[in-house]
Structure formats: C-alpha cells, structure tokens
Length: 463
Image 1 (cartoon, rainbow, N blue to C red):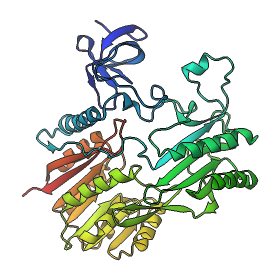
Image 2 (image 1 turned 30 degrees about the vertical axis):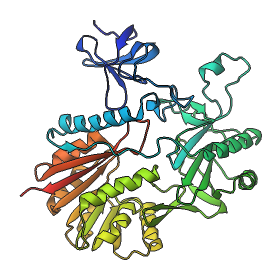
Image 3 (image 1 turned 120 degrees about the vertical axis):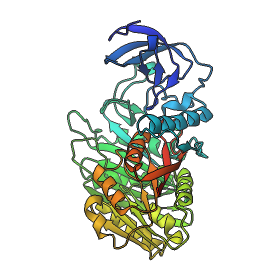
Image 4 (image 1 turned 135 degrees about the vertical axis):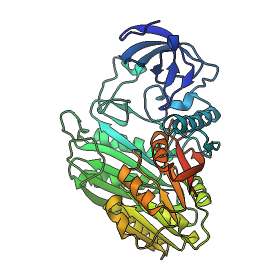
C-alpha cells in the first residue's frame, strides 16, 4: 500500500531500528514509529514522508506484542529519558548488540568483525549518578491531568518531552536515579513553588529558577545539589540550602550556578559555593576522582568500571609501554591505566577538564600521567615520544578526519577505541581499516532502558 503523509494506518512492527524506533514495512516501505516493540500491531499517523522512508506517530496499540511488559515509570510513554522500559532487559541487550553489528557491516563495511555479547549493567534502575531537571513556568500536563479541570498548567520541575525545548513534564519519581534523589527534588520543588520567584520561561526569557542538577557519589553515598538560576539571590538560595541540609544528611555539597544565557544550557557563568565543598569524591577501582558541578564523569559509575576493565584488557599493558589517550577529559582512563603503563599522555581541548585531570592525578599520587591542553590536531606534535598504544574515546560525533590522519601517521601497534555511538564508531574504524585489523568489539551497557550503547574496539596494526 502507498504510504501518504497525514494519513492513518494499522501497521505491524517487525523490528527495532538503530535509534530505538520500531520498524514497520508495509509493502517493503520502511516506516519508523517511536515507543513500539517488535510484535506490536499499532495504529499510527504519518507525519513525515520521504522518498525511501516515513515516520509515523503512535496513536494507539491495537494488539500488544508478547514481548511488551509494563513499564515501571508512569512517565514512560511521554518522557524521553528511558523509552525501552516496556522491553525485557535481556532483549534490550540483544538489540543493542545487533545495532553495533549492523552499524559495522552497513556503515563501516566491516563484515567479519567479532562482536561479543553486551556486558550488562548490574543495576538497571537507580544507576545514574547525575540527573538534570529543568524548571518550567508552564509544565506539560499528563493525559489524566488534562481531564481534570482543577489542575492548572503552572510550575513544574522535570524532564523535557522529546522534540521540544520548552515542554517539561513535572517528574515526581524518576526510577533511573537513586531513590533519595526524588526526595531531595520534592523538597526543592515545594520550596520553589512557595518562593514567590518564577521559573524561567524559555520563550520570554524571564524568571529566576532554571535547573536543578543532582549528582550522587556511589563510593561515599553523598549528594551534590546544583541550583542554576538566572541571577544571584543569596537570601533565597541560602534559605533553601538550610532546609536541604537540615533534612538530608547525605547532601555534602550545594552550589549555585548563575547564567543569563538565553539558551537552555545549565552551565553557569558564575558559581557560588553555598554549603560544604565544591565537589564530590567518586571512586573507580582503587582511584579517587573529584567531580565538580560542571565536570564530565560517566553517568553509570558501576558500569564504567566494567568499561574501563575492558579497555585495560584490550590495551594489554605490561608496564613498559607509552600510551596516548585522545579526548582524555578529566583523566579517568589515563589514571585507570597508570599502574599498567610506563608513561601516559592525555590530550584534551576543554580547559576545565584538563584542570580536573591534573587535580585527579595529584589526588591519587600518580606521577606518570601528563595532560596536554588543546585541539588534538595541533597538540599531537607536542607528545615527546611515539606511543605504543593509542586510546581513543571521542564524543558522539567521532573523530575529525585530521585526527584520523595523525593517528595513522603515528601508527602505534595497537589502538583501543571507546565509542558511545555505533554509527561514528563504524565510520571511524573504516577509515583506520586500511592499516589496522579490527580484532574484536565488546559493547558495554551504560544506559539501561535506552537505545544508547558504549563499545570498546581492539585494533591491531597489520603486518
């Protein structure tokens, strides 16, 4: 049947596509539908139509799939945080592995790569050590709230409806962060609602309260609260801080980030310490790391240890090698490998990350990690010795082709590539495949109930 825009159809979902959307193929024509499970028969409306594919919006499920299970979260059908809760975790892992295999084969044209089973996350709920909630003066109402005339579309704190920048669901119970975080958030919500100060309006660019960021240290079971506001108001922030500290002994740090940026970005232009220290201490293996409000740290601490264990295994260090870590961030991988290598160099372009990396090295008493600040293609020549192993852990967009050129020019014996995006992993491995054999890829699940997957690839120089 010909698929037309703005028309409705009953479709059978036969698969999950990369990106997490259900796939139907009426007469062989691909139609992608979000929030579906293979085996569902669904009623959809086509809202986007291209020459070779279309997207449909789910109206209702006509016949649910035998795979479909009840999501734990009441916001699951509307919030973009963890859409795969209706799929059993074992099946999530199967689809994640297949997405890695298919990306390598179809994007990277690497058809014979051995892809291992996904290393699972021990915790599939309460696993995130950082959550960022937006404050809104006009929250998005749930269907049951729309039916109640007494409920007004007023203030809320929560997560965005996918595809929107100003529609926020008022989240009272998020299952992917530790449970105490919900109690902390509820206390903040009540205070903000009674404060007399408005939440920020992203269209009018007015209002005081912008974001609430919560961080949790697994090692010490301590919390950081980062209150992001549009301007300074020490009386109000200190009053909220006093209330939080009195109620929650686990809160060891409260900061106020201030920003007047018109975009919806939570990083402050100024940071004021309100209570305790300006950082948390987290541990990976035997190493400690300082985590400040705006520093990057992997959001699943326990799974991160599994990821870095695989990096260690693939690197195969015996204490005699020089290692170069590209996109070294706050130094977590160099520090993790420091006891196994002769010397490690890290390159990172973000100044604050380099500062954090050097502090973390000092915190752990490590003397064989050196961090170079700048763009990789400019700083590569400052590395004083040829590396035996290069670790590459780029952002989602992958490596710039100039960086690939530098890697090939240095031509180390071994490369360990860590990726959070199977598509750019496949693209980059194809660019390296002229000189390197991809021996093995191991996916590691850092983000249960989402389609996201980390992967570690082992590349060895061809003879």
